[in-house]
Length: 285
Figure 1 (cartoon, helix red, strand yellow):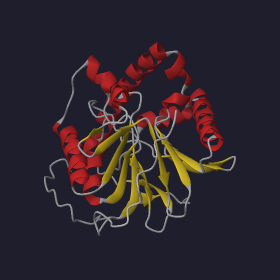
Figure 2 (cartoon, one colour):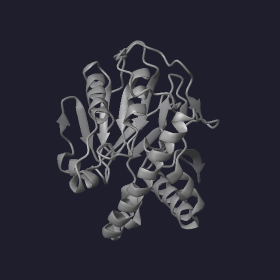
Figure 3 (tube, helix red, strand yellow):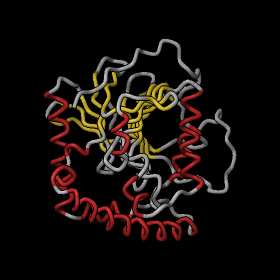
Figure 4 (cartoon, one colour):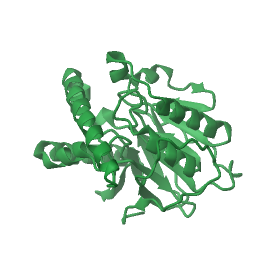
């Protein structure tokens, strides 16, 4: 796996009002009922950047092959990304395992969106980050793909329960809460897998001379140092509703978007600022 060379540094910002130098999102799983597309659309409307990295599993080809599901909000997300690209945001799509069909188009561009297997990003302070979805470091995906398909089916069932559960919470005025994430963090084997994954992906980045790595895949937003290498996981838009951002001062932060998107909202005002501040992790580097 060779990271693509970073594109030339942006000297003239495409949008003067951009909130961030870069935004990373992954694991949206458009094409499934579990995709929280309405909330992602709300996030994209309110947050602009110079570089937008789509870090894999944006579209869920696995589920679409089984059963077609494509809500209008899923189409709206795609249109919003395309619109950002047309307005000057540099969009890079890093293919994942659920959208692995895109790997046959590595090196090509659809419109202004580059399709890559992995990429490199330089932060303002000069740190070099490897950007990869992360499935190459998942032993189940690489060596027992049939088991991954079985697990994906069970996971989809849990997400359906999660949707019904959160509709009830929303009616009661309660914030979003992920049942699937709660269960995952309570299972010892799942915790061990996550730890092994984080160690493997940072070791790969370090061995190749990177200062850190940005990935997705495991639906667990995290940012910490592991053996001297920065590990960043931007989370997902199924359970966590999270993104990784780089500020104009060069700081990396995890953002958890507030549960406030209104499905009936039809406005498309790209110039609005967030009505409420997003929840940010205490740790930032």
